[in-house]
Image (tube, rainbow, N blue to C red):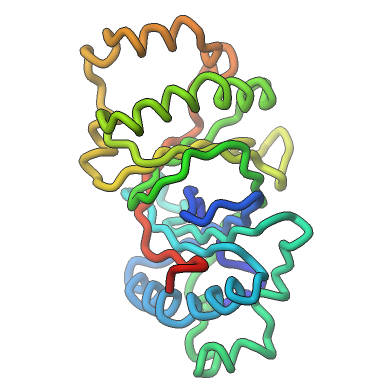
Length: 256
């Protein structure tokens, strides 16, 4: 396992231990190797993450599995490593070679996962807003707004209170919501510059949230939001992707 890796959002999609920054690493795992990959990461490498968290080197670690196929070459897993700040985002402290064998209890080479997986891309992210909550599924919305600052501001002032009310009412089945912006990589050809996530505890809850219902669009609260939002200008083509991830394992200060 690569020392400086292991992402997601907690997408992500994202750990219940919320921090200021996160390192997301996306993995492509062959179908015939998924069971072994999950076993090695959750039974062995999660121990290294837990040790780093206990030592204060990071605040959380989680592994997520993508639900469904979006592209044949796309990654199907994502790690989320969360940190208190950029100053404390030191991967060498987390995946220290001298410490690995001691924490793992076995030779690192016997449980590595790099040899049979690939890393299509990784991202450094900053938390912008969050409504904390525990959830099993994360609907991650990847966006490339024309004005990222305006997108972040509207989500904070308009959509966050809207989601907060829905979460408190329990009517939509949502358990959490959050938003992160990309620190790196950046550029005109970047995949996304910001993401939001909606947390749910059941797949049915996610699907009910996604499906089109005329009644929902006639709701007075929704109509009011549509009258206020400028998302039509900020995201004229909508999200780049909206992808569901299932939590495989989380490790935090109070989680093993």
